[in-house]
Every structure is written in structure tokens, then in C-alpha cells.
Image 1 (cartoon, rainbow, N blue to C red):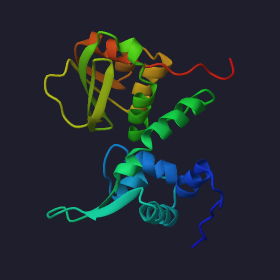
Image 2 (cartoon, one colour; image 1 turned 135 degrees about the horizontal axis):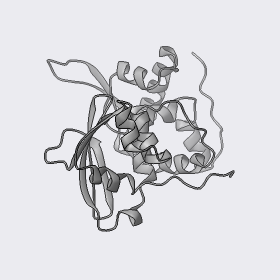
Image 3 (cartoon, rainbow, N blue to C red; image 1 turned 45 degrees about the vertical axis):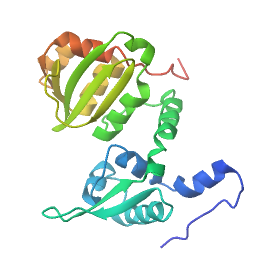
Amino acid sequence: MAARRDYFDGCGAAHALDLVGERWALLVVRELMLGPKRFTDLRVGLPHASPNVLSQRLRELEDAGVLRRRRLPPPAASAVYELTEWGLELEPVLQSLGRWAARSLPEADSIKVDSFVLSLRTMFHPELAAGTDVTLQLVLDDQPFLARIAGGELDIRRGEVSGAAATVRCSPTVLAGVVYRGLPVADAQADGLLELTGDPAALDVFVGTFRLPEPLWA
């Protein structure tokens, strides 16, 4: 096992990098931000991280108090990893990094479910949601999410919702195209990439509350 590398610097930023600065560490945090996951679930979200490296990062983050491992009660009886309260405080850090890096982010061929949902939390603009009260059911790669905008705030989390104004079923990559790149919903529907039931205007209102930062280079 490779020795852990520390900066031995009294700066708080240096200590933060000691804790979560190793390769894949912050992405493990990202994958757990929406709730507990099994090791196999983390492998799906981080397919390019080798099992050995992923195991090492989980041990390091657990030793640092960023996450914990617990066993689910029967009949599941499997182990899951989840962020501690202190670990959950890293979400604003991830959001700030995401907004900063989005100014030079190249267009990606695909985006994972958790990455996209967290990007919505990051790119939501309360000033664009003034007077908006809308609830959607998003089903992203067969994973259901409640998405509600009310009182200038976005609430998006895993779960079923009844009484949604609209239900959207698609991949996170397709919805990212609609939200961030202006892909017309009608085009995605015509291509069989997106299924929309309910009020189409509700999705339009939802999409209008997100905005990427200005690109670094025109």
C-alpha cells in the first residue's frame, strides 16, 4: 500500500488536502453526497477507479472521520458507506469547485446520475426562481428523484413523489443537454431519448432556473 502523503503545513487548506486531496477522494465524497452506497454502487459511479485504490480511499476517509461504514439490518445485511455530518459539510466545497471549473469544462459525452443531480444543486439560481412553485418527478437511468422549487429554493433528492406536475424519464446526459445546452425537449422526445408526462410547461419552468457560469474563453 502506498504511503499517505501529507503536506506538513499548518495552513487549513493544506490540511484539507491532507484529508481529501488524494486522487478519487473528493469524488468518493461526491458519490456519497446523496446518501449511503455499497461498494459495488461506488464502483458503478467511479468505474475508472481500481477496486484497490477505491478501498484505500474509503479506509483513509473513514480514518479521517469524513465517512463511516455500517451494516444494514437483515434482510439486506450488506455494508454501506455514508458521509458523517462533517463529511456532508463538504457539499459547498464541491459546489464552489464545480462552479469555478465549469468555466473551462469541456463538453462531455456522458454524465453519471449523482454528478448531474449535484450539478443541479450547484447551478441553481434562486433569483431565476422567484415566484416559482413546481414539483417534478425525475427518473434518471431508472433512479427516481423528487425535484421541487419553491420559495426560491431547490429541493432535489432520491425518492418517489405523488402529485408531480410532470414526470421526466431519460438519462442524466440527455437532461443535462436540455438544462445546460438548450437541447429542445421536443427533439429529445422525437428521438426517443426523453419521455415526458404531465405539464410540459412545468419542465420549462424548472429548466429556466439553472444557468452555467460564463465560459473562461469565448
